[in-house]
Image (cartoon, rainbow, N blue to C red; front, top):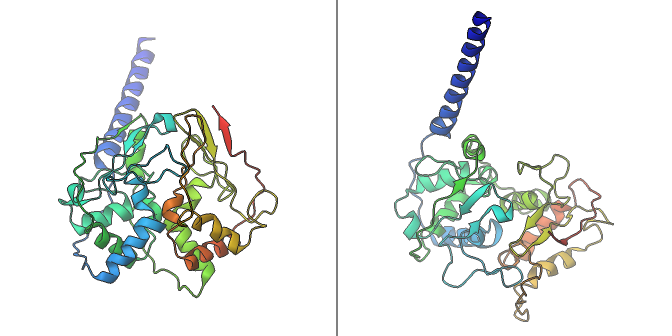
Amino acid sequence: MKKILKVLLIIIAAAVGGLAVILLYVKEGLPSVGAAPDIKVDRTNGRVERGKYLANHVAACMDCHSQRDWTVYGAPIKEGTFGGGGEKFGKEMGFPGTLYSRNLTPYGLSGWTDGEIFRAITTGQNKTNDALFPLMPYLHYGTMDQEDIYSIIAYLRTLPAIANKVPERTLDFPVNFIVNTIPQKAVLSPKPATTDPVQYGKYLVTVADCVACHSRVDEHGEIIAGSEFGGGRSFNFPNGTVVTTPNITSDVETGIGSWTNELFLRKFKRFSDSAYHEQKLGPNDFNTPMPWFMFAGMDSSDLTAIFSYLQTVKKIKNDVKRFAKR
Protein backbone atom coordinates (compact mmCIF):
# COMPACT_ATOMS: atom_id res chain seq x y z
CA MET A 1 0.00 0.00 0.00
CA LYS A 2 2.82 2.37 0.91
CA LYS A 3 4.53 1.54 -2.36
CA ILE A 4 1.37 2.34 -4.35
CA LEU A 5 0.92 5.61 -2.47
CA LYS A 6 4.54 6.53 -3.16
CA VAL A 7 4.10 5.85 -6.87
CA LEU A 8 0.94 7.96 -6.95
CA LEU A 9 2.70 10.84 -5.22
CA ILE A 10 5.56 10.63 -7.72
CA ILE A 11 3.10 10.68 -10.63
CA ILE A 12 1.21 13.65 -9.17
CA ALA A 13 4.45 15.52 -8.48
CA ALA A 14 5.66 14.86 -12.02
CA ALA A 15 2.35 16.05 -13.47
CA VAL A 16 2.37 19.21 -11.37
CA GLY A 17 6.00 19.83 -12.23
CA GLY A 18 5.33 19.31 -15.93
CA LEU A 19 2.37 21.69 -15.84
CA ALA A 20 4.49 24.28 -14.04
CA VAL A 21 7.16 24.02 -16.74
CA ILE A 22 4.56 24.45 -19.48
CA LEU A 23 2.99 27.46 -17.76
CA LEU A 24 6.41 29.01 -17.20
CA TYR A 25 7.24 28.58 -20.89
CA VAL A 26 3.91 30.08 -21.99
CA LYS A 27 4.32 32.99 -19.57
CA GLU A 28 8.00 33.75 -20.16
CA GLY A 29 8.86 32.17 -23.53
CA LEU A 30 5.87 33.36 -25.51
CA PRO A 31 4.99 35.18 -27.63
CA SER A 32 7.89 34.56 -29.97
CA VAL A 33 7.33 35.97 -33.44
CA GLY A 34 10.88 37.12 -33.98
CA ALA A 35 12.70 40.42 -33.75
CA ALA A 36 11.09 43.64 -34.89
CA PRO A 37 12.18 44.50 -38.45
CA ASP A 38 14.86 47.14 -38.86
CA ILE A 39 12.86 49.66 -40.89
CA LYS A 40 12.49 53.41 -41.13
CA VAL A 41 9.21 54.45 -42.73
CA ASP A 42 9.51 57.51 -44.95
CA ARG A 43 6.78 59.97 -44.02
CA THR A 44 5.64 60.98 -47.49
CA ASN A 45 2.46 63.02 -47.94
CA GLY A 46 0.86 60.14 -49.81
CA ARG A 47 1.59 57.69 -47.04
CA VAL A 48 0.37 60.01 -44.31
CA GLU A 49 -2.91 60.64 -46.15
CA ARG A 50 -3.45 56.95 -46.86
CA GLY A 51 -2.61 56.09 -43.26
CA LYS A 52 -4.99 58.74 -41.98
CA TYR A 53 -7.78 57.29 -44.08
CA LEU A 54 -7.11 53.72 -42.96
CA ALA A 55 -6.57 54.49 -39.28
CA ASN A 56 -9.57 56.79 -39.01
CA HIS A 57 -12.13 55.24 -41.33
CA VAL A 58 -11.36 51.61 -42.28
CA ALA A 59 -9.30 49.92 -39.56
CA ALA A 60 -10.73 52.62 -37.28
CA CYS A 61 -7.71 52.43 -34.97
CA MET A 62 -8.59 55.81 -33.51
CA ASP A 63 -12.01 54.61 -32.45
CA CYS A 64 -10.57 52.27 -29.82
CA HIS A 65 -7.44 54.30 -29.13
CA SER A 66 -9.42 57.36 -28.05
CA GLN A 67 -12.10 57.80 -25.43
CA ARG A 68 -15.70 57.59 -26.63
CA ASP A 69 -18.74 59.51 -25.43
CA TRP A 70 -21.24 56.78 -24.62
CA THR A 71 -23.92 59.32 -23.75
CA VAL A 72 -24.37 59.90 -27.49
CA TYR A 73 -25.65 57.31 -29.98
CA GLY A 74 -22.70 55.83 -31.85
CA ALA A 75 -20.31 57.03 -29.13
CA PRO A 76 -18.26 59.66 -30.99
CA ILE A 77 -14.74 60.42 -29.80
CA LYS A 78 -14.44 62.81 -26.89
CA GLU A 79 -12.69 66.04 -27.72
CA GLY A 80 -9.04 66.11 -26.68
CA THR A 81 -8.60 62.33 -26.51
CA PHE A 82 -7.86 61.51 -30.17
CA GLY A 83 -5.30 58.71 -30.24
CA GLY A 84 -4.47 59.19 -26.57
CA GLY A 85 -5.83 55.84 -25.43
CA GLY A 86 -7.45 55.14 -22.09
CA GLU A 87 -10.74 53.66 -23.30
CA LYS A 88 -11.72 50.97 -20.81
CA PHE A 89 -12.90 47.48 -21.74
CA GLY A 90 -13.91 45.78 -18.52
CA LYS A 91 -15.66 42.78 -17.04
CA GLU A 92 -18.96 44.62 -17.10
CA MET A 93 -18.70 44.47 -20.90
CA GLY A 94 -17.87 40.77 -20.91
CA PHE A 95 -14.08 40.93 -21.13
CA PRO A 96 -11.88 38.55 -19.08
CA GLY A 97 -10.30 41.29 -17.02
CA THR A 98 -9.81 45.02 -17.39
CA LEU A 99 -8.11 46.42 -20.48
CA TYR A 100 -7.31 49.94 -21.65
CA SER A 101 -6.47 51.06 -25.17
CA ARG A 102 -2.90 52.30 -25.49
CA ASN A 103 -1.73 55.81 -26.27
CA LEU A 104 -0.76 55.98 -29.96
CA THR A 105 0.39 59.60 -29.92
CA PRO A 106 4.10 60.46 -29.58
CA TYR A 107 3.58 60.54 -25.80
CA GLY A 108 2.98 56.80 -25.96
CA LEU A 109 5.08 55.77 -28.95
CA SER A 110 8.09 58.11 -28.92
CA GLY A 111 10.29 55.31 -27.57
CA TRP A 112 9.14 52.81 -30.19
CA THR A 113 10.93 52.20 -33.47
CA ASP A 114 8.96 51.96 -36.69
CA GLY A 115 9.81 48.26 -36.74
CA GLU A 116 8.39 47.75 -33.26
CA ILE A 117 5.15 49.46 -34.26
CA PHE A 118 5.05 47.33 -37.42
CA ARG A 119 5.55 44.14 -35.42
CA ALA A 120 2.86 45.09 -32.89
CA ILE A 121 0.28 45.87 -35.59
CA THR A 122 0.94 42.79 -37.69
CA THR A 123 1.77 40.12 -35.09
CA GLY A 124 0.45 41.23 -31.70
CA GLN A 125 3.84 41.31 -29.97
CA ASN A 126 4.69 44.71 -28.51
CA LYS A 127 7.91 46.59 -27.78
CA THR A 128 8.49 44.74 -24.51
CA ASN A 129 7.67 41.38 -26.15
CA ASP A 130 4.31 41.10 -24.40
CA ALA A 131 1.24 39.82 -26.23
CA LEU A 132 -1.47 42.28 -27.15
CA PHE A 133 -5.01 41.24 -26.30
CA PRO A 134 -6.77 40.22 -29.55
CA LEU A 135 -9.46 42.86 -29.11
CA MET A 136 -7.04 44.48 -31.56
CA PRO A 137 -7.40 42.27 -34.66
CA TYR A 138 -3.69 41.90 -35.32
CA LEU A 139 -4.15 38.47 -36.90
CA HIS A 140 -6.13 40.23 -39.63
CA TYR A 141 -3.71 43.14 -39.83
CA GLY A 142 -0.97 40.57 -40.37
CA THR A 143 -2.50 39.76 -43.76
CA MET A 144 -2.64 43.36 -44.97
CA ASP A 145 -0.64 45.04 -47.69
CA GLN A 146 2.78 46.06 -46.35
CA GLU A 147 2.48 49.54 -47.83
CA ASP A 148 -0.81 50.08 -46.00
CA ILE A 149 0.88 49.19 -42.70
CA TYR A 150 3.70 51.60 -43.50
CA SER A 151 1.11 54.28 -44.24
CA ILE A 152 -0.57 53.80 -40.86
CA ILE A 153 2.81 54.07 -39.12
CA ALA A 154 3.61 57.25 -41.05
CA TYR A 155 0.29 58.75 -39.99
CA LEU A 156 0.68 57.79 -36.32
CA ARG A 157 3.97 59.67 -36.24
CA THR A 158 2.11 62.90 -37.15
CA LEU A 159 -0.44 62.80 -34.32
CA PRO A 160 -0.23 65.60 -31.74
CA ALA A 161 1.04 64.28 -28.42
CA ILE A 162 -1.53 63.74 -25.67
CA ALA A 163 -0.09 63.38 -22.18
CA ASN A 164 -2.17 60.47 -20.98
CA LYS A 165 -0.55 57.70 -18.95
CA VAL A 166 -2.72 54.64 -19.53
CA PRO A 167 -3.20 52.07 -16.74
CA GLU A 168 -1.85 48.58 -17.29
CA ARG A 169 -4.28 45.79 -18.07
CA THR A 170 -5.24 42.94 -15.76
CA LEU A 171 -6.33 39.59 -17.23
CA ASP A 172 -8.04 36.74 -15.44
CA PHE A 173 -6.61 33.22 -15.29
CA PRO A 174 -6.24 31.35 -17.62
CA VAL A 175 -6.54 34.13 -20.22
CA ASN A 176 -3.39 35.75 -18.84
CA PHE A 177 -1.55 32.65 -20.10
CA ILE A 178 -3.60 31.93 -23.22
CA VAL A 179 -3.07 35.44 -24.60
CA ASN A 180 0.64 34.69 -25.02
CA THR A 181 -0.12 31.87 -27.46
CA ILE A 182 -2.12 34.05 -29.87
CA PRO A 183 0.45 36.30 -31.64
CA GLN A 184 1.91 34.83 -34.80
CA LYS A 185 4.17 35.85 -37.63
CA ALA A 186 2.61 38.06 -40.25
CA VAL A 187 1.78 36.78 -43.73
CA LEU A 188 1.39 40.01 -45.66
CA SER A 189 -0.18 40.11 -49.10
CA PRO A 190 -0.73 42.82 -51.72
CA LYS A 191 -4.15 44.42 -51.65
CA PRO A 192 -6.37 43.47 -54.59
CA ALA A 193 -7.00 45.90 -57.41
CA THR A 194 -9.97 48.21 -56.95
CA THR A 195 -11.19 46.97 -60.34
CA ASP A 196 -12.11 43.71 -58.60
CA PRO A 197 -14.74 45.01 -56.16
CA VAL A 198 -15.45 41.66 -54.52
CA GLN A 199 -11.83 40.86 -53.66
CA TYR A 200 -11.06 44.47 -52.79
CA GLY A 201 -14.19 44.53 -50.63
CA LYS A 202 -13.01 41.38 -48.88
CA TYR A 203 -9.71 43.12 -48.14
CA LEU A 204 -11.51 46.11 -46.63
CA VAL A 205 -13.84 43.89 -44.60
CA THR A 206 -10.77 42.10 -43.22
CA VAL A 207 -9.07 45.38 -42.31
CA ALA A 208 -12.27 46.65 -40.66
CA ASP A 209 -12.66 43.30 -38.86
CA CYS A 210 -16.40 43.22 -39.53
CA VAL A 211 -16.52 39.48 -38.89
CA ALA A 212 -15.45 39.84 -35.25
CA CYS A 213 -18.61 41.70 -34.27
CA HIS A 214 -21.06 40.35 -36.84
CA SER A 215 -20.63 36.67 -35.88
CA ARG A 216 -21.56 34.59 -32.86
CA VAL A 217 -18.80 33.70 -30.42
CA ASP A 218 -18.34 30.95 -27.85
CA GLU A 219 -17.59 31.39 -24.15
CA HIS A 220 -13.92 31.96 -25.00
CA GLY A 221 -14.68 34.76 -27.46
CA GLU A 222 -13.84 32.58 -30.48
CA ILE A 223 -16.01 32.93 -33.57
CA ILE A 224 -18.35 29.96 -33.95
CA ALA A 225 -17.61 28.35 -37.31
CA GLY A 226 -20.45 28.79 -39.75
CA SER A 227 -21.79 31.95 -38.09
CA GLU A 228 -19.56 34.41 -39.93
CA PHE A 229 -21.35 37.70 -40.73
CA GLY A 230 -24.67 36.27 -39.55
CA GLY A 231 -24.78 38.57 -36.52
CA GLY A 232 -25.73 37.45 -33.05
CA ARG A 233 -22.81 38.67 -30.94
CA SER A 234 -24.05 40.44 -27.83
CA PHE A 235 -22.39 43.37 -26.09
CA ASN A 236 -23.19 44.32 -22.51
CA PHE A 237 -23.40 47.99 -21.61
CA PRO A 238 -22.89 49.39 -18.10
CA ASN A 239 -26.51 50.61 -17.93
CA GLY A 240 -27.77 47.04 -18.10
CA THR A 241 -28.66 47.02 -21.78
CA VAL A 242 -27.55 44.32 -24.21
CA VAL A 243 -26.99 45.09 -27.88
CA THR A 244 -26.72 42.25 -30.38
CA THR A 245 -25.15 42.70 -33.80
CA PRO A 246 -27.29 42.34 -36.92
CA ASN A 247 -27.06 39.78 -39.69
CA ILE A 248 -25.16 41.30 -42.64
CA THR A 249 -25.33 38.30 -44.97
CA SER A 250 -27.56 38.50 -48.03
CA ASP A 251 -30.41 36.51 -46.49
CA VAL A 252 -33.53 38.37 -47.60
CA GLU A 253 -35.64 37.76 -44.50
CA THR A 254 -33.13 38.25 -41.69
CA GLY A 255 -30.11 39.90 -43.32
CA ILE A 256 -29.45 42.59 -45.91
CA GLY A 257 -30.47 40.59 -48.97
CA SER A 258 -33.19 43.09 -49.85
CA TRP A 259 -30.89 46.10 -49.53
CA THR A 260 -29.61 48.07 -52.49
CA ASN A 261 -26.13 49.50 -52.67
CA GLU A 262 -27.65 52.96 -52.30
CA LEU A 263 -29.37 52.01 -49.05
CA PHE A 264 -26.13 50.50 -47.74
CA LEU A 265 -24.29 53.74 -48.49
CA ARG A 266 -26.99 55.86 -46.83
CA LYS A 267 -26.75 53.82 -43.63
CA PHE A 268 -23.14 54.91 -43.28
CA LYS A 269 -23.12 58.35 -44.82
CA ARG A 270 -25.94 59.73 -42.68
CA PHE A 271 -23.43 59.99 -39.83
CA SER A 272 -21.21 62.33 -41.84
CA ASP A 273 -24.09 64.37 -43.27
CA SER A 274 -24.04 68.00 -42.13
CA ALA A 275 -27.77 67.69 -41.44
CA TYR A 276 -27.24 64.87 -38.95
CA HIS A 277 -27.77 65.80 -35.31
CA GLU A 278 -26.15 63.74 -32.57
CA GLN A 279 -28.65 61.79 -30.49
CA LYS A 280 -28.14 62.36 -26.79
CA LEU A 281 -29.14 59.27 -24.82
CA GLY A 282 -30.87 58.80 -21.51
CA PRO A 283 -29.52 56.48 -18.78
CA ASN A 284 -31.64 53.53 -19.97
CA ASP A 285 -31.40 54.08 -23.73
CA PHE A 286 -29.67 51.64 -26.06
CA ASN A 287 -26.40 52.47 -27.76
CA THR A 288 -24.18 50.59 -30.23
CA PRO A 289 -20.48 49.69 -30.32
CA MET A 290 -20.52 50.22 -34.10
CA PRO A 291 -18.13 53.13 -34.85
CA TRP A 292 -20.52 54.83 -37.24
CA PHE A 293 -18.80 58.21 -37.09
CA MET A 294 -15.50 56.65 -38.18
CA PHE A 295 -16.84 54.36 -40.89
CA ALA A 296 -18.95 57.20 -42.29
CA GLY A 297 -15.72 58.72 -43.59
CA MET A 298 -15.07 55.80 -45.93
CA ASP A 299 -15.11 56.55 -49.64
CA SER A 300 -18.36 55.58 -51.31
CA SER A 301 -16.42 53.40 -53.73
CA ASP A 302 -14.91 51.47 -50.81
CA LEU A 303 -18.31 51.04 -49.15
CA THR A 304 -19.64 49.80 -52.48
CA ALA A 305 -16.82 47.24 -52.65
CA ILE A 306 -17.68 46.09 -49.12
CA PHE A 307 -21.33 45.69 -50.10
CA SER A 308 -20.29 43.73 -53.19
CA TYR A 309 -18.26 41.33 -51.07
CA LEU A 310 -20.99 40.86 -48.47
CA GLN A 311 -23.33 39.79 -51.26
CA THR A 312 -21.02 36.81 -51.88
CA VAL A 313 -20.65 35.44 -48.33
CA LYS A 314 -22.72 32.46 -47.26
CA LYS A 315 -26.32 33.39 -46.49
CA ILE A 316 -27.32 32.77 -42.89
CA LYS A 317 -30.88 32.82 -41.62
CA ASN A 318 -30.58 34.43 -38.20
CA ASP A 319 -33.29 36.75 -36.97
CA VAL A 320 -31.53 38.82 -34.34
CA LYS A 321 -33.19 40.56 -31.42
CA ARG A 322 -31.11 43.71 -31.44
CA PHE A 323 -31.85 45.21 -28.03
CA ALA A 324 -32.63 43.70 -24.63
CA LYS A 325 -32.24 44.31 -20.92
CA ARG A 326 -30.04 42.14 -18.69
